[in-house]
Structure formats: C-alpha cells, structure tokens
Length: 306
Image 1 (tube, rainbow, N blue to C red):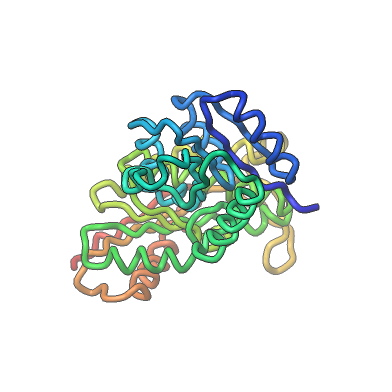
Image 2: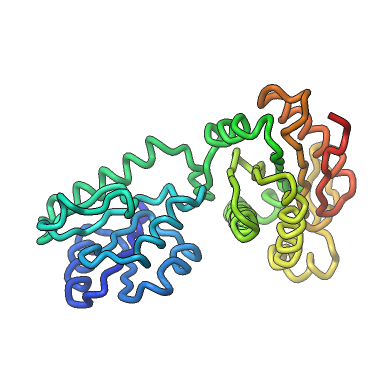
C-alpha cells in the first residue's frame, strides 16, 4: 500500500484552513493543520512532513524567520514550501525575504494547487539525493560537502554502528531501520544545536557530519551520550539484562555481541596532505578501525602532524 504524503498546513484563518484541509484529504494527502505560528517550527523539526503550505496573506517577520530557519538547515531545506499569496500582492511580494519553492495566488484554483504540490514533490526527488530512510542528504551531497571543507579548519566525521548486521539479523530490518532513523536524528540535532554544519547519510549505517574543527569533539560527545542513553531501548528485556545479544557471526556460528555502540572517526580537513575526498575517506577508515577496537561508543580524532 502506497504511503500517504504528509502535508503541514499553516493558516491563522481556521475556516479557510478547514476547507483547504478537506480538499487536500480528498486527494489522499495526510494533513496536519496549525493556526498558531509560535510552535510551528518546533513541530516541523520534531515530525518533518513531505511538504509545507503556508498562508502568506499577512506576511510578517516571524514567518520570514521561520522560512529562513528551514531553508538554512541542511536537513530541512529539502522540504518543499508552497506559499499562498493574495493575487493583488503577487507582483510586489518580497520574494527575497520569504524563501519559497512555489506559490499559489488566492482565491485558490484547487486544480492548480494539486498540480503544484505534485510537481514540487517530484522536483525535490530529482534535485536532492536525500536518503529515503533518514531523509538526510545522500552520497552526492556528502561528497560535495567534503570537497568544500578541504583546506579549511573543518572536521569530517564519519559515524558507523558497531555490530549492526547481527542486530538486523536478530531483530529484523524494521527495527534496524528505526535505529538508523534515530541515529540520523540524533546526529542532525547535535550538529544544529551546537551551531550548525552539514549532516548526511551515505547509506546503511554509514553517516557523516561536517562541523568546524573546534566544535567536532563536542558534537561527537553529544551524539555518543544521546545514542548511549537510547541504545538500551533498542533491545528486548532479556538482552538488556544480559548486556549482550546472541546472533550468528560471519562463519555461521552463534556468538555473543555487545549492545549497539557507535564509532566516530574525525578527520581535520586543513591538513596539507589532503587534496581530495578519497584521502579523507582513507584516513577515516584507518581511524574507524581504531575506534571499533574499543568495543564501546567512542570517537578518534586524527592528531597526526600536518
């Protein structure tokens, strides 16, 4: 069964919003309607929709700030935003202040709105390579972000989940996908809360974030602390009490594996020996091997001389 597309709708006009909600639901969209602006950004961060529709018939600085926050964030900028604008204001509308992906003038022609919604959703799928599971920027965006960081006092940080394959084998891919979504959210939130940066998902249990070098260890610590806090909830009671779970190893033999942990390799990109993305990946692989030997969540920072 095809999953319904989720739309967040904001309008201070409750009557107008109710009508629009009904029409959108008639097209099989799942609609979350909000009339108050103050909690809207937090709600979007907590439960990101596929598309946002915002009533801009009375644009103000708060709406401007909300849109700027969304579009400046590496995770949430991918969500298409359609503005609803009074026809008389469309020619003089301050487009530079309100960052929209598309707009529809009022009174609404619903046939036009439905087409614009579908075009926006399809456009974003073509333009962005976001991972479909975590919705974080994918491999192409990761490579571009790493290339941009080379030569600057930044840190490219790779995250890998220790013993993730046997966890998938025991608990199933649905539970495994929840772990990946959770880690993606923990990582992107830690990056955002400490001042911003890039957060991406290469694929599988391989994640990357890029932040200024001076903040790298702080972000690593936050991610590890939050993952460790939640990790126990990923296991059944018996495995939690034992402190390990039993799965088949690569030889097909039963083996006890420790509860999930993460390894983070931190590569400073202002080193003279780094000239391309491949070198960053190579160094990260070396550091990750060291981090995994600890058997618990930890990060390893490359402190070798430039």
